[in-house]
Length: 195
Image 1 (tube, rainbow, N blue to C red):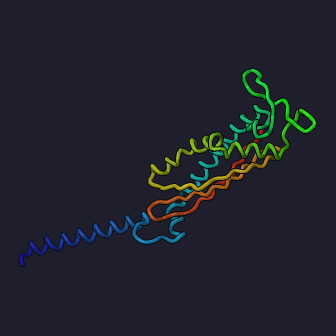
Image 2 (tube, rainbow, N blue to C red):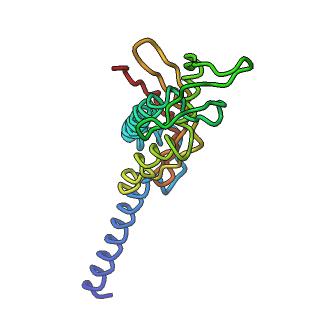
Image 3 (tube, helix red, strand yellow):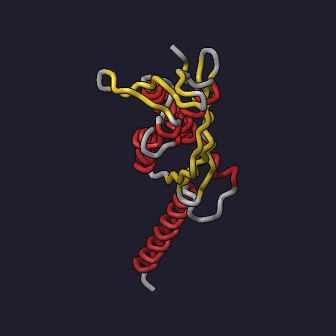
């Protein structure tokens, strides 16, 4: 065999081996070659956990501020009809003035517990706070543009009103993934300070 032919065959084999090593290395770092352990997945995706939590917290805080304005303008009720309340139009806005009891009509503000329920109802309502949170998060598109997959599960928000703050307990698990790497992200609670 000719020396030039041997050299050509040797170079082609060397290039194929180098290309294969580079390809396997790249695919391995993306988690596409072998199943990844939870530790490996956390190593690959760990840098994105804090930004996902931060986005969720920020959006819940914004929705909570909107909920406070909405409910505050309505006598601390998110919905009149569910409460059996009567209201009047006053300067274009409905204002609660009376609630119906067995003894007639009385002026009654909601208790702290009822106010917490009203805030939670607003935040969990898909037409009110839920829509605002979804719009703010925008389907986690910022992460998907960077090649990450984000799969949110069902969310439930509950509210605890303190003396100087409102704590929104966020029960919302989100799965973050890239390639075969997957880790669950537990959303952080949001705290809105009372002004």
